[in-house]
Structure formats: C-alpha cells, structure tokens
Length: 103
Image (tube, helix red, strand yellow):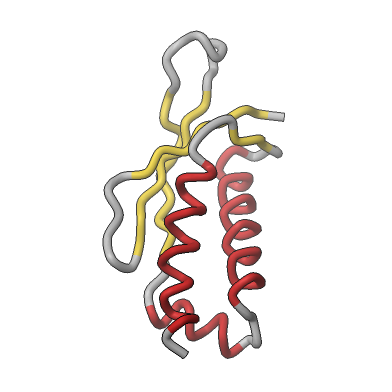
C-alpha cells in the first residue's frame, strides 16, 4: 500500500486544489508531487448530493470515498494518507456544512 501526503493550496470559496505527494526514495527523503486534484463544493455540487437524498453525514462520506477513489486511479494502487487528510476533510466539512445549515 502506497503512503502519500495531501497538501492543500489556499482554498477558493467553492473549491480547493490538493496536491498528492508520494515518497519514492522513502519517508526521510523529499516527496514528489504525483498529481493535483480539485475538490469542488460549490452550491451546484451540494445541491446534486441533496437531490440524491444525502444528508450532511452521507455527503461527507461521499467526499471521502470520492477523494480516495480519484487518488487511487492516479496512483494505480491502494494508498494510505500519512498527512494532510484531516486538514482537507475539515475544510470540506466546513464548506459543505454551510449549505446544509442554510436549508
């Protein structure tokens, strides 16, 4: 299982770019960027989830699964995050929660 780290760029109001870093020479060496993923949480995106009947908790699970699967496609293997996951998900949760609170 590949160990990766997620690093966020400064977020926009409706999205954040997340760099996926791996460690081809080991954890003590400098990481390399494998790809960058845009996580979108605009009103349109959240309304689509709400139309599917997803409550806030289900929407967050959707984002977690989506992020895992997108990174897995780019890496072509399963992975585990050793840093940055909590920061990315905290941002997603706060932005998505605002749409559910507005209902």
